[in-house]
Image 1: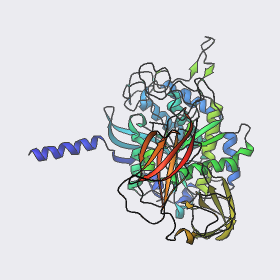
Image 2: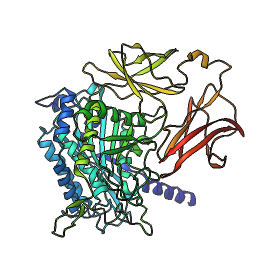
Image 3: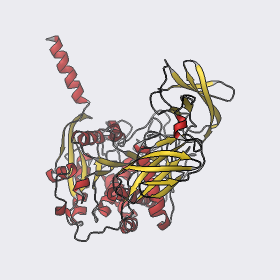
Image 4: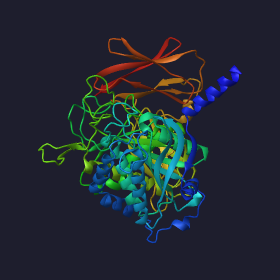
Length: 578
């Protein structure tokens, strides 16, 4: 009997920490997400196939006034905590989600009812409430044979100092009415068009207590084998003012203003589909948008998956192996620590729209820059448009390295006449992107001891796919066959990436063949030889990586060394540049 009671207790405990009864409340939306629908039922009466026309429309029609209106409305609900009131028509998360649902309905009416509003319901105990709902709108794709799903998300829940305080004033303007407004505005504008891939606009719940709404939908996608192509998470995306304790890597100093930079966080280093998605976003901005904008934006691809010690709704999708990234303002007002002496706005009752400096009853100094938020929405919408219209990504081989050239052979998705080739060295971004013709072609990249190559398909109308896996090339002067000889070094310590770097960097070790060893580590040392940190590394793959976080605000030159079974193999230098 004791054993039975223990089993029941453990099962009940597990239920408290997992999402169950996952349900898309609209049966039509559910089938569309799963790819079981007739796309002819959702065809626009005025179809537009030219992606440049769509991108231009997005740029011209994302309205800062609309974003402001959404944010003002969300502030009126006073407390959007996941566990707050679900009955009131004016306050609490229930009123907020019904309002958001009604906005999706309104947008659908203007888009020939092709946008499908729905809730995504799941059971889980969060802040003493057992059932919760994300709010979503599904725009069906036109190509059922190549069914894939793009997700644009932001969490609508807010919080004060305590994660389950349902009575405090929790307007949550920067975190995250700003991201929710962005998702709503993109749904309004982008639903005027059709895309080959299905797009899901989603406002998640339970983010502040543990990414629960995003995790539930990621689980739904995994369980139902939904082919999620890309996830764009928007969180703390409209503020421009630096706080005292902004989470690194972020602000240069308190009250610094930055309205022309956005950070993209994603997981991994070498061969990371998540970093590849971030690079894709930046490439689309550079090639499709920047020449048309009046205020250019700096898109910074960050090393870490999120800010130091923080997390967001892109993470559950990454954990299910779906390509995902997070858009966040360059400057944040706080690190949400809420400890003694904490004076910043994030995760407090002070996360409000702004202040009335002349005491006339009207806010005249805003903490959110609506034009900045609009520019970030356009960046999202442009990348999502190209991703939703583009072909499948290819695979490839590099047969020979001779002199300065690389011969690229496309081995999958070989039906296209043109492909793009991305080359990067020591940064998180591509150094160059080349265009090749046919499935076998030669490029002549920069001379470098170590670089990474990936490819993308380009269809007949110039739409490019997401980029493929990466292949690591060690030396452009050496034939690949020579790297496989017995005289080659089995281990090579790679230059850290990026270098110089933000608050963290990735250190890699390349492997040729395999070795027998008991333990291996990376030693971080100052120039006097004093060890600062030791990082365990596993040497099992072609490229093995560890991430070193030195924190924000440091500068100087340091060394790092590879040790295997107490033997120093190789050392290199790296630069802290904060």
